[in-house]
Image (cartoon, rainbow, N blue to C red; front, side):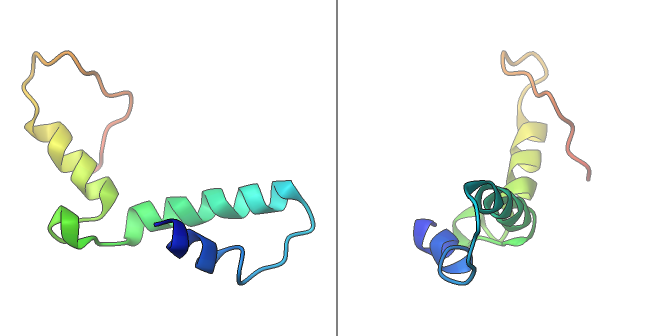
Length: 71
């Protein structure tokens, strides 16, 4: 993952400030998590996997989710 991020951001673009790098990294990670399908997650995106695993948890579980996943 680190190599993927580095190749997609730092090695392809020049940043005038640290804030530009930070903004681009945040945008890249958001796009990656919503679009990239991973073999280790059986072809799901990280977002889809989180949504799917959240729906399988028991109703009375101790973990609470602050956001709802859209199906």
